[in-house]
Image 1: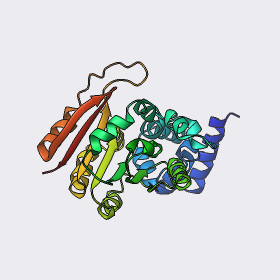
Image 2 (image 1 turned 30 degrees about the vertical axis):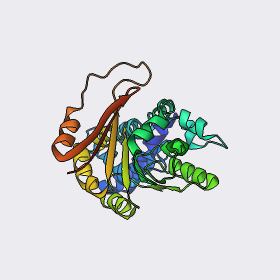
Image 3 (image 1 turned 90 degrees about the vertical axis):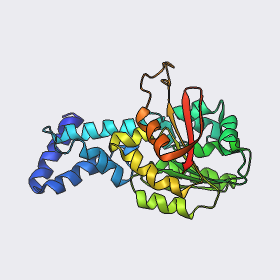
Length: 275
């Protein structure tokens, strides 16, 4: 009996023992997070991903498979699995194991200078940070750094690094779909506050359509500046994307004050503030 047949047999047995639909869904979610990659994701994110397939007329095993595939696209597609259990690796090694941060290593210092020029000891609230906390040395000035990340393994990794290096930073394990909690974190942070959302909006949209607009409307008034970025070309083949993302560019232009708009090495950065 292979592992798929075994899983199906277990599911069938649990269905007989727990006939209520919501109980079966709880069991399926338990199975989804048995995979190490998703084991420390917030329940809110798991439930949102599962909701895309919950009512589909297919087997429970297929629902688990489809939910895991979506979660991988949202949270794991750019990071090496080696990041889930690294041992005594340097910040540079960590940054190279994530596709987005690996690319930015070539221009981190220039990027942060362009985004934070004029602010003395700013607070950075890095939403969907991934392993971006390991780029701290590239700020070239003292900052307060707060990372918010859904993957618990990565928040543990960053907090361990901050502690060892005596960095004024912390990583918080939280879902970006817990909007009220995110707002409280931003509101309590020291001024001046800059919020980073590097390559995050597309991921939010995968789980909940138009959530990015709602999210930005709520958090922009709480910060001095907000920076969103998105890829303009594929990471491996360096091919330009046809999609222009006018949906979010028009939204930002209509609702906020544009400060900067520039592109570096296949990543476009939009910096703006409240009106």
